[in-house]
Length: 167
Image (spheres, one colour):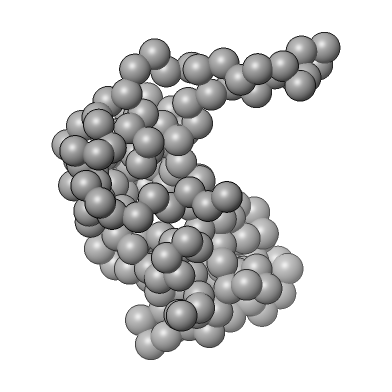
């Protein structure tokens, strides 16, 4: 089983700078990402036009370097334990319009345009965030669907590919 690469490879080394100081990280003009102890960086992905949150993914150094070099979103699959290009199986590739790093460079935000049906969720919805969680006095109540239909049939798109959801 592969594990996320926390040590930058040659491509990543050319793209990423060492984290020299707090000022360098927070106010500098060089990318110096901080990956967690498991070698991963969280990445929130939104639709470039509508701003809708599509998904939260994880990147290791290879996935981040590939994303920046190709302008197509790549992620670290925790279920498959490997880097994958979003849309490799489904055809729903994410073309990166803009990438932003947060203040301490430990989280990434991608603005993308999704090829094909415009959906990013393996369940068939446009967004992976298709249910609303009750809060306040309604906490503990039932989830509410925020999308009223699936954009595609996952069985038709993915066939017998393993489902990434783990119990």
